[in-house]
Image (cartoon, rainbow, N blue to C red; front, side, top):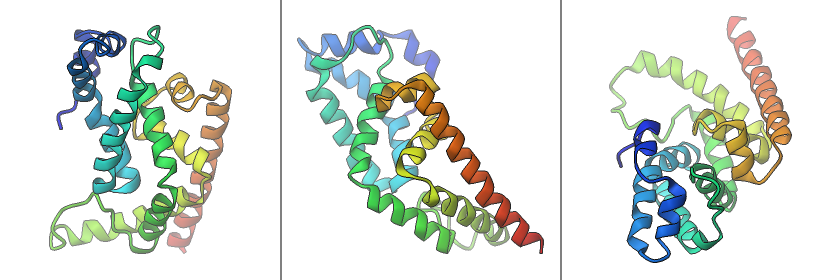
Length: 197
C-alpha cells in the first residue's frame, strides 16, 4: 500500500465528492480506499498485528461503502469517519489487542518488527525493555483512553477529528487524552526509577 500525503490527498477531488459520486459509479469509492487504506492499516496493525489489520481494513471499507449514503457531505475529509468505523470494528477485537499488549509487556517482542533476530541484538535488548514498559502502560489504559491516545499518536488525528471519529465531544477527547498521558507517564517513570536502582 502506498501512503498518500495530505498534500496529495487535497490535490484531487475531496473525499465527500468521491463518496457522493460512488452512488452512481461505485468504482469512485476505490479512490477513497487508495487515499486512506495504508494509513488506517498502519494504525490498526500497531494495535492488533498485520494479519488482523488486513481483515479490519477490508471490513472498514466494506462498512464505509455500505454506509456511504449516510456520509455527511459537509465534511470534505473522510479520515475521521473511516477511523471511527475502524475503531468501532476494533472494539470487537478488544481481547486480542489487550492480549497483544500483555504479551508485548512480557516479551518485549513487537509483531511489526520483522527484522532477523541476529541483527542489532544489543539495540533490541534496550528497545525490548522500553517496549515492555510502553506496552504495560497501554494495557493499563481503559479501552476508551487507548482509542483516543492511539488515534492521536499513531494516526495523527486532531482533537476535532478524534471527536468526530468516536462521536464524542472534543472536551471528552481532551480529558481522555490527558488521563491517558498521565497514566503513561506514571508507568514509564516507575520503570525508569526501577532501572536506575
